[in-house]
Length: 437
View 1: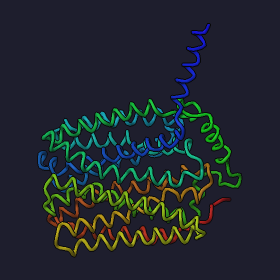
View 2: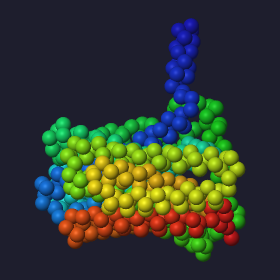
View 3: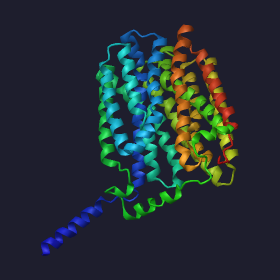
View 4: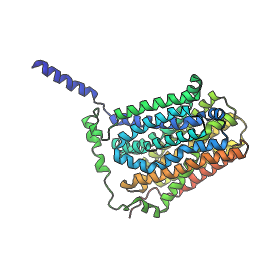
């Protein structure tokens, strides 16, 4: 009897040790890791493209098509990806997607030509398409309403951070392993392991997580009350587009993503081919360019929250920050055409990316415009608009570079125009009015 009592007490103590205070912040950190891995895999081809182009004898225009092909299926997966998350729940979708795209990333190392490379990038887009929807959906279950603004900004900040570290990781793997093919295999294996970790760590209902404390479960149980339906809401999300602000949001995000995808897909090639930087140094400069974006996103998110908490109007804060960011992008990127040293050119691109990533604030805008039950749909429309730019811009860049004999002057003019579109459209949005019937 005494032995049974000791055993029972031991089990209780063991269970108590498995409880993790503040588990939601550990889960939040895991979602940041997922976004980092997401962008490492997205950017790996861009980083290795100078070597792949030589091996497979690929022209600039064809390079643009290859870099664009990811966006074809990624954009198309946004709406069905959201449906999959609702149907299968985030845990299954996120873990399956990670494992799937990890396998595709690894198989990319075996491609023998343009067609197979395009096919692998399209498959990568299929598997990566639902991941951000799944992560965001899960995030709303783990963070209370007053925690989500900074949470969304930080998770989105995993994008430039992943691209920054991806530059170092992929470059280091290629140098160490001696070939880009094995490097893709190593990155793919890492992604598969993160997918397995997602299945182990994630739960669709926080209350069912074996490591959550009773206090935190009770705290998160209040989310359902906070996220109640708005009875004055439009019957469907299409009605929001009777107003100008949603259209301006789509235009602003199109301009934002035009520069974002342009830099994501072509910056390493520009550094390597135009500025004649060694392959090893290309990884370091890629880290600088996208590390600056990560710093910019954190800066803008913190500054916006502080100004609003201090009493500044939402319209004044959002219009000023996003308008200034778009102008900053345009000025910094156009000045690249007027400097003569590689260091100055790359630092200006880094400055442009610093301002560009202030656009992480866009992810908070749908919740300011739409009723709770339509935020996801308006976010999906915004993200689809941006991914249209993600499809077009890599091809346009490749065409401009090929037609100009390798010059990026026209490319930076195009990016500057996109920055101004971002600025003008952002200023035209009314951030303080929730649109209801």
